Length: 251
Ligand SMILES: C[S@@+](CC[C@H](N)C(=O)[O-])C[C@H]1O[C@@H](n2cnc3c(N)ncnc32)[C@H](O)[C@@H]1O
Image (cartoon, rainbow, N blue to C red):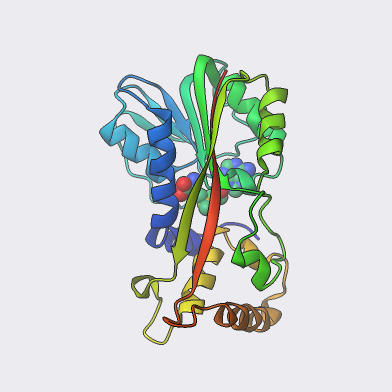
């Protein structure tokens, strides 16, 4: 299923978890004024264009209808991480990819492209779910088109193959996603609905993969029962512990 405007707007409303994970990554990258940055995150690139960078920044979201705010030092391109041919080699000092690499179809091609567009000494930052950790989402009900979270060893191999330097920082960022009333679509929405909606917009609709439209309500009910089963016994809250693999590597 393709990304849609509705999913993109839903994501913009409810993606503070990813935004905060992105800020963790940006702190690790220690971006300073004048650096040229490229990212798949429109919102985070706008954040650094406003706050940190005086040099040109580029964002490559795949969502055509993403609300694109205009800044002098920020430009948007629509494309895929696997093909950054709009940019010559050595174009950037920083490339960062937040909450996205696990959705990229050809991860080795993307990492090779990141190495190509980075100038010598430039930094790659990646943050995304760790393949070394099993989340409640995976236990509740198998998704049709699940993300491909990378194990630390797989990330190391991708970086080695794309000729990143061996000295690199890889840490685990432990976070908790909690279903918040503020993110509910309507007054009747239960915590489980909020969690399912968040997973849906965060995956650009892939949680339901190729399920035909008429079977989606049944799949949703199944997921809902799964989440309700693992809600906190005392508070009734639906929450999910997550481990993000955060990587900074240099070319
Ligand atoms: C969870 S969102 C993350 C958005 C943003 N990076 C952030 O930090 O909030 C996942 C994004 O991955 C994008 N995506 C999926 N496949 C991609 C690819 N091959 N190249 C670039 N982006 C891709 C989707 O369009 C979606 O916007």
